[in-house]
Length: 506
Image (cartoon, rainbow, N blue to C red; front, side):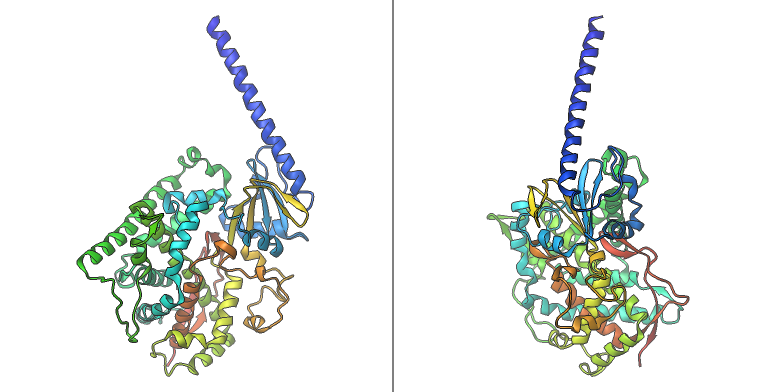
């Protein structure tokens, strides 16, 4: 009798606490809605679950974001499982958020990368992000980057020879696999000082697949909100795939770090400057500087090293793979632009075997606007997000604390209000000195304090890559034609690959 009474009282208290918490949460959401939804449309929702069923799977996320932002505000208010979101392609709002020194924290969606990247530069917050950014920024100085062009040359040459041996006779093939292997070799050699040679040995294939799995699963968990709960996610088949992929990725990165440490200890990678193929003195690579860096007077721990190396291994090969693969697709479908680009290259380089130098790339103005237009239509990071950590005012409206701002870079870059014939590939639009668009309607590498630290590296790599490929091959559409099925899996990818044909230039 007494036990029953205790249980009843306990049950009543639990019920009261739950009702109080739910009521408080509900009124908090309604307060946020009253502040935000008064000046923008609201995505349809149901109680508790919010707009959960308005979102499709990861293959439809770019279309969903277009649907949510296709209105005069270019934005919508959306609730999902109690989280308030603003989905936007409004360039003014993007500028407000990205240029702010207060709105620096990534949204909780990035937490799904913590098991892989930890608190590396992509995911860290506050003082840790600032100190690590300050320590790492010098490794991307232009005086260091220009020495990487020789490494770009040699690795792309390997890819070109492999394409000649394997793919020239085929009607079509997926070029993405070749690009990812090449960019992995490039980031290992430029940033880590390790000659991986994965293009010939396929040593990096398992790592590349692991990265693809981790990215896909993280994106899937951010869209399918029920998978954000670990106890539910752990019941899915992706849980085992993620566990295996994380082990592969971490082992690969740790092996790169250990290999570099051993080389430094043996004196095989001496810290004094060396001369490259052009007689220029080389600089310390990213990992050299990282191993010798201190934060608040202390060297980085093994775990901090692994997190930063994981971040740069991922960003350094996955984002550039996205942009370069898109370039193959675009040029295959625009022979007139490819021809004009080839003519510019012929005016600078004696023949297709001429090594490319850093200074050669600076004068290739048509190549520059072609790359800008590729990145406009196919931004490597199509969606980014921030969380508001204190109430802020935007154009007379309050955006409450804890609101997540989901910014669709892909959709703002294709907005007809910012670009005439926005879906058309037209590099000449970047020749116009008085372009009628906001600066924040073109942000393929994000913008502001948390912009992509490696964007100059990526552009330089793309310039070298595209120049050498166009001088060696005529890029043709797949036979039969095969359009890219674009998805956002942190970076922009084609679900069905990037299929082209090649014809060797004489």
